[in-house]
Image 1: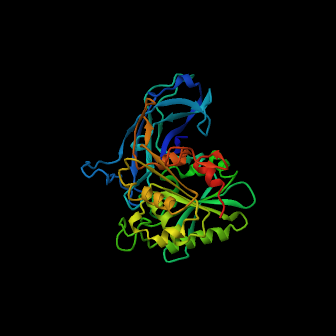
Image 2: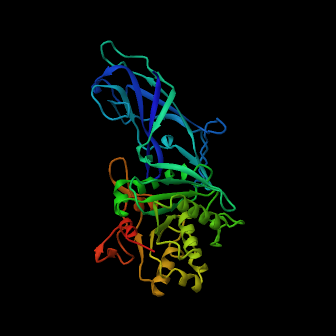
Image 3: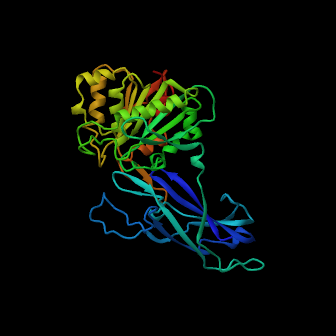
Length: 414
């Protein structure tokens, strides 16, 4: 009776518990419950040690460490069905929350991240005036999590190559030979749980009906995960060498996945991209395997153009590439990476290379106002299919018609 369900929403910046679903002892009208009917205490616990999480704010070295526990603010309460959908009257009550730090389901450092156990205790504060009245409810046992965005996703493991790589993947419902979209995660989404590689930020948007349609109707999605960071060259993990110890293992993972799904994947339409650290690996892979991919979409990539030789540049002149970056990027200088490489490619004669360069990354605050955000987080615009312009500010055209980045990718063939 007193088990609660959680509802997870995968947002632009990762997975958050945005709703709790509580069973009621009797059917109740929605007007009888409110945001002040319950209070919600949460403790975020390490799955391996059982200890309360103390976040490591590696990007804020002066931050004071504190245990990740406390009360969550209820934004809205209403009666619902067993899946949390509004229903009046209903035998369940839903409690909705914002994207506060306590609600985040992942915790990590620069090299890796893990899911945490979110242990709730929900206590009734006010009587629900029904006949008979309902009071004294306490919920402290978890039932299950609901996340519709994960429909069609599963995890796998590739043991080929020097470094075994876990991966997440989306299987489309359509039949026939379909494109394969590869997404390479950024720093902070590495580790041993592939789920982090596609939920650490909103990679699951690639399986949404909107983007699937723009990719030609349906597409496979593959999100490999490395144990550390793709930029690990065996000596430094975030250095300037433009090398990676994971190149051959990643190629082996992709090859094995394509072979396993030979009947469903079109080898002429394998698209590769990723953000930041994953943008680096995108560049590394197209330099090392320039004839394997149909197109690339490096996002805020960290591949230093000064290390790209003229011979390397010639290898990819034929390849369709769409760069995405933002002015004011706090972590990766676009001038020495994507902007420099974009100009070198176009000056060398590349005909199907584009770059969307934003003036900044903005977000909406709780009042719906557009305010400055994290400028490195330009992947938000990619997931939401808001990349439509070239470096000169004009629309990217394909077949004479303006296209977005996913429409463009959906039209590329090797």
